[in-house]
Image (tube, rainbow, N blue to C red; front, side):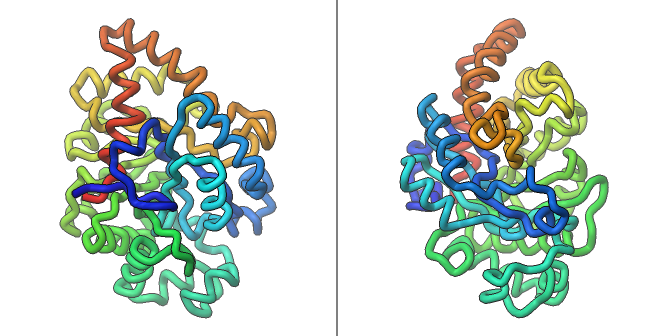
Length: 329
């Protein structure tokens, strides 16, 4: 029987409800700490809790915290937000991308992965089996020596390239997935390299219907999107509201194009709000309420103009597809 693993408990997929499938809640990425990039440090759990409450007040029920170990997550703080708000939160095992790995390992990580200096040192020195074991433990036992278990496994690659250590973490994530049945999610820098990731995943024997590819709205190429969709994978349009990367009209047009081609069951939507300036309660940004209060009403209009039932599509994107994608099968 399938289930979704939240930080608090395993639940039936039908209990997930309205879901944001790619967000960041409380984190201090060591790489960005070392670079002095304060905007990328979500370091006030109370302000994040207020964002989650805004989401809940508008009907939101579940959030995926897509923050892996190398992105400086705060597992216990996010767990407390789940308890205090009643919103289901799903944690993330695995790794993000290579650019982050020059950062020094925090002491809390060294305590249970070994006395490595940096993430690069750890990933390069550990055997593939050791990395697989680490990820499996995050899913089956708990994140960072807690009893709070991950509900998905992540890997990532760089812009227009896949570095050797990224190949290693991808393979580790794939093998951990095969051992645990936890859903997979892929970081694609600026939406690139998904097809190359797919080739590597196929070599590991992965059923592509178990994975979501992130940041598809950073690479609004209809041919590229369809090639990914043909594999059965999910496509995550998780930059809603970030018009610095392109107008909302382009994102919606790409989504409707996939619907027109018959892939409406493979589309996920979220905001990936990983900066203070994206949060309302940190820095007066659009906040977690934006997608529900502003984006969905606009999408309904555009979907209806294109000849589709917008309400049905919204239900699929935020409820049906997310529940299926996030299930352990």
